Image 1 (cartoon, rainbow, N blue to C red):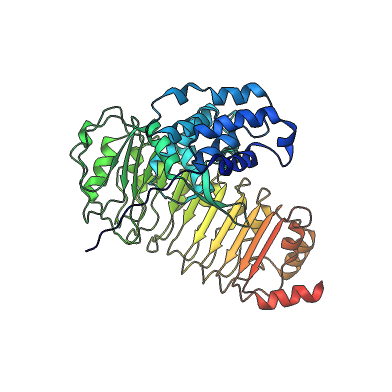
Image 2 (cartoon, rainbow, N blue to C red):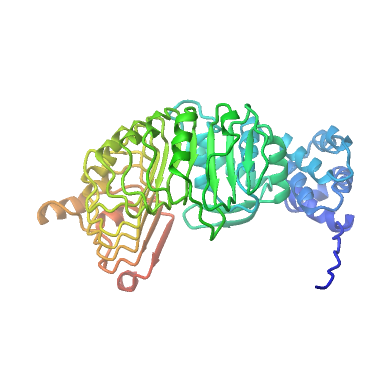
Amino acid sequence: MGFVFAYKLKGLSLNQCLPVFVKYAFKEGQEKQHPNLIEIGKEIVKKCRGVPLAIRALGSLLYSSTFEQDWINVRDNEIWKLDQKDNSILHALRISYNHLSPPLKQCFVYYSVFPKDFTFHNCDLVNFWMAHGLLQAHNENGDFENIGMQYVKELMWRSFFQDIRGFHNGVYSFKIHDLMHDVAALLFQNEGVIVKESNQITAKTSYRHLLYHHWDASQTQPPSFLPNLGNLRSITFFKRVGKDIIVSQSFLELIVSRFQFLQLLHLFGLNIEAVPKRIGNLKHLRFLELSDNPKIKKLSSSIYKLQSLQFLSLYDCEKLEQLTTDVKHLISLRVLALSTMQKHLPNNGIGCLNSLRFLVIRNCSKLEYLCEDIGRPRVIRRLWITKCPSLISLPRGVRSLSSLEELCLVDCERLNLDFSTGSDEQHNHEELNSTGPPLRFLQIGNLPQLVKLPQWLLRSSTNTMQTWLICFMSKLLGKLESNV
C-alpha cells in the first residue's frame, strides 16, 4: 500500500477574487461609477481569504446597493473580530445569513435537517417549509406556494445554492454548499438530533426534530434515548441509495403514540407494511410522506382524521388497493400524490378536496377512469398523470378547473382526450363553446391514441400558454406541422 501526499489548495489571489466579487456586487458596467465602493470591496475580499463561496455570497448581498454605509457595515461587521484561525469563511457566510429577513433565516436554518449533498426540488422544499409553519402569509388562505417560491428565488439570488438546474415547468433542482450547510447546522444544533450509524446520542428534552441520516442498519429499532425527548415536531428518515431500511412496526406505533404534536413524518422507502393504526391521533400532522413503500395494501381508516394534513404522498405504493371516499375529510390537503390498484377513482372523494392545489397520479397499472367530479376543487393548479397505461379518458370536469396552470399527461398508452360521457351532439357543442382551463404549461408524451388536440385544450392555451412539451408523439406532431 503506497503513500498519498495531501496537497492543500490555496485560496485565490486578490486579483483573481476581485472580478468575482464585482460580478456579483454590481450590474454590468456599474462598478465604473463607484470607485469608492471598489476600494471598500477590496478590503471585504481580503477578509474572505481567497474563498470563492464567501466572495460570491457577500457580493450577492451587496448587489444593487450603492449606499456606502451598507458596504462599510459589511467590512466592519463584528463577526470578523471573532477567532479567524479556522472559521473565516463561516464568518463571511454568517454575515450573509444575518442580512436575511426573519422568515428567510428560519427557512435557511432548516436546510441542516437534510444530509449534505442532498438534491432539493423547489416544490418539495416549499411543502417542507409549509409543514413547519415557516411561510408567512397574511391569512390562513394565503398563497403559501407562491410565497415559498419567492423565498427559494431570493435564496438563489443571494448565492445560497449551487448546481442549479431549471426545468420547463418552473421546477428547479439545486444543492446547498457544504459550508453553507455547516452554517445552518451550527444555528440548528439545539433544535434537532441527527442519528447516524453507531452514534452515541445524548438527547435533550428541548430537541424538536429527530433525523436519521444514511442509516445502514437492517432493522431500525426505537433508540434508547427516545423516552428522553420532549415534544418532537418532526421525524425524518433519509436512506442511502442502494441501502434498504426496515423500520419495525413497533417503532412506528411508538412514534405515533409517544409524539402527538408531530407536524411532519417522513417515512420514504422504509419497506413498511402498514400505516400505524393510531396515526389519526396526530392532530397537528401537516406532512406525511409514505412514498416508495410497495408493501402497503391498505390505509388505516384513522388516517382520514388528519384534518390538518396538507401534504400526503403515496407515490409508488403500487399495491395500495384503494383510496376511499373518506379522503374528503382531509379538508386541509393541498398536495396529493397517489399510486393505486383501483380501476376507477370514486366520486365524492378527491373531488371534495376544496384546498387541493397539486394532484399527481402515477404508476397506476389498472386505473381506467378518474373521478367524474374532479372539476369541483377549483383551486387545483397542477394535474400530473403519468405511467397509467390503462387510463382510457379524462372526465369532463377537467375543463372546469379554472385555476389549472399545468397539465402533464405522459405514458398513458390507452388515453384519448375525448371525454368519457355524453352524446356526440352534446360533446361537439360543448367542445366548440369550451374555453378550457388557463394553462401555462402542457406536457404530453407517449399517448399513441392521441392524433389531434381537442378544441377545449387548444382554446385553453390561446392567451396563457407559455410552454408546450410534446414527446414521442409522431402522429400528433405531423398533424400540427401540416397545420402551421
